[in-house]
Length: 116
Length: 111
Image 1 (cartoon, chains in turn yellow, purple):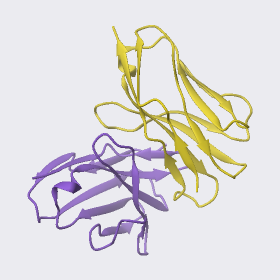
Image 2 (cartoon, rainbow over the protein chains, first blue to last red):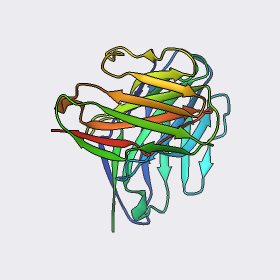
Image 3 (spheres, rainbow over the protein chains, first blue to last red):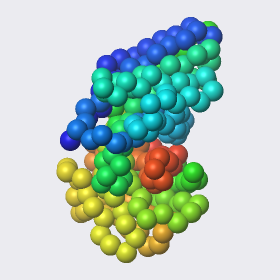
């Protein structure tokens, strides 16, 4: 079974600075998707970024970018120019391309604080 | 993408009672999913709901405790039965369109 690990339970960053959240995963599959979700205090799960494993190019979405290292099974999220609104729980997630829907695995989460 | 609504957004319930949570999607989807998020924890899949068939439950979750209905392709309900304080959690529904989209969640507190 696939597992997702986030080794940083909590992180903090100064406003306007850059922070990187770590995620590693374990799988024997060659094709899959990886995601970062943000959950602010409102509890809404918001998709931040999505990466297909077959794409070597790292996904980017405005101030959010990933460093996808397939061989190392690493998928870190970089937040540039951090803003107060970035404060939230961040979950890394893995989705198999097989076993539709039932193989969506979440990491334990990293709580990010943004300091003014 | 998908727009998902849930009702109620929050509730406070007495031990031993039941609560039904509704989930509405703005498009037709084959599968809908129900998750539980206990305080300070990540998301745990409760069950997968297919229209026209019994829901598929994950290990540790049973139909008697969490009955699910899926009457059509845009709607599902999850009932939390015979509640205890341990059921206090956020319950989220979602759909999978190669990316999982989530409803806003229902915050349940059981006294």
